[in-house]
Image (cartoon, rainbow, N blue to C red; front, side, top):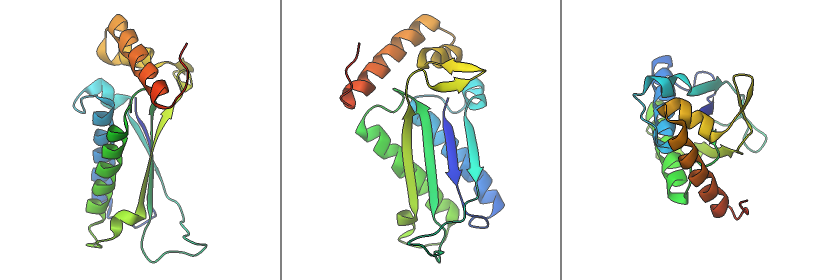
Length: 165
């Protein structure tokens, strides 16, 4: 159940490239979570919000567009530094390609923030959804989903030095 907030200044990309980019960013985040981007149910619960910011760098309008992506997922879905680094690299590359400016330093104008939402804080369908609830709906096996969720959350907390109960 990934959630993307993608910040692209108005007129930074052509509309066709921007639509393709939104789809690509969604697929990248789904794969990072371990989901199949061709799964219709998973695509249905993968939302991306496009924001049109007015960006200032050092207090002034920059001469080239700057981009920001906040990739939100339930706790436990992005375990490991390597997974986060790959997500950041893939999203950055996708944005640079979509821009098509040929600017060899374009990647410096892209910031990507992977964010895990703490267990029990993902609000959907009128209530708090845990990772087991979300995985269970996606894979159709609540027992397996619970086991996977418990493992992933424990690993995430261990990586961050948070004691597990």
